[in-house]
Image (cartoon, rainbow over all chains, first blue to last red; front, side, top):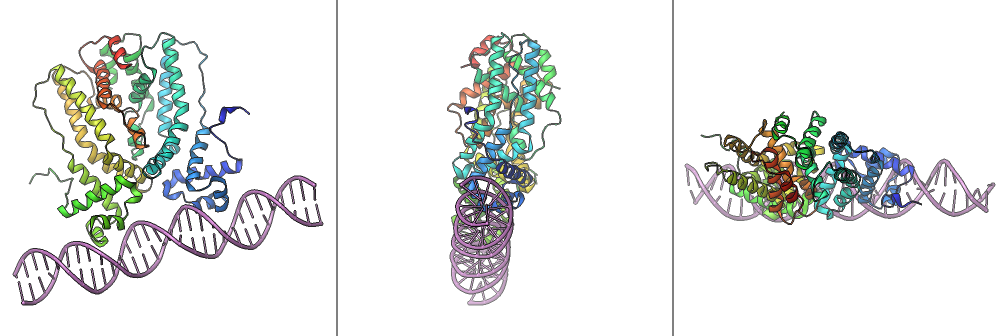
Length: 219
Length: 219
DNA sequence: ACGGAACCGTACCGTACGGTACCTGATGGG
DNA sequence: CCCATCAGGTACCGTACGGTACGGTTCCGT
């Protein structure tokens, strides 16, 4: 047994089915709609089974996060030879993927749920969400950073700091605004392109003229 | 009659007292702790008064946001003559203030509340929070941007885009992480300094060497 | 001094939730 | 063929909430 999924205990197919319904309810109606009775009805199972499988309601929530995280798999294309163009494409792809993930129905619903519970459960769900949900995407970004540095295309002292800079350039306050109910961007691609442009101006090796950047960033 | 506070209807002193208690309850125990009975007890008023004053529970929440926003007043020091050093100081001060506001107990509690309600109230509270809470700080930042541009110290096509870039550099994913229960930064000042450094490299006129930036940003 | 408005405290009601218990039907191994 | 295990359905319990109603009190204008 590989320790690959040691942190995602996995559930039986039947339980996955139930968790799928739980996610659906959560997305449709928020945490108020995710009641044990409602879930049992929607998933055609008994409340008793829910409690046997997940312990209590919080257990269901935790299982939902683990289940959702287990569905996300990032394609790892690290074998490629990096050129400046390839790196740029990968960075832009990362930005687009990040914006799409953060703006997804399920992601927003789970984040809202965890944030709403933060005040009363000591941020247990929040930790879980950050751990499970962020690991994959962080790994991918850090690999990209390090690969860029190794290829002589990026320069920074601290890969983590550089990544956070990149993240901020991509997302800005958009995540919180979406969590508060605002619609996402019309064009994630343009936002990703602008973020990459700025990021490369800060940490790339190609000395791009500042004016060219400013013009494009102002569009 | 100036329409100065047309959007912040203000409340009677007694009602402000009640709203203060409501904020205290919310900060201490989250929205679960903010019950009408609990608030009436904590504020030594009757539930009937609460319903007379605020309509229903959602009215109380909306009033809390308006009340909290009415307490925030940003000092406007726009009369000053801008030099590059002064601008830098103002930008750093803005960054520090922003991080402090976002990490404040009341701000986090209100944001958690609004986010938790987003799924079931059609983001009414979220809109309110963005409108009331963001207006002041956004105005200050935009004024800073425009002033910097007028003084020939900043270059950008779109002030709003430049501001969002700055915001992202300052906050990155920190706001969401704090909403999820993580502690804030140990040193807001350093974060603000690094953000300003990067922002000036992107939109400032002084052509700072890229290497100097990278070294300092990597600390 | 009077009357009424505003307000506090409490009691009350309907509802809906989390969680438990009990019964029934299916399934699978001996 | 039988029995044990598991899961679904239903009924139930205690609790706590939002919202309302009512009696008593304070305070202010007249």
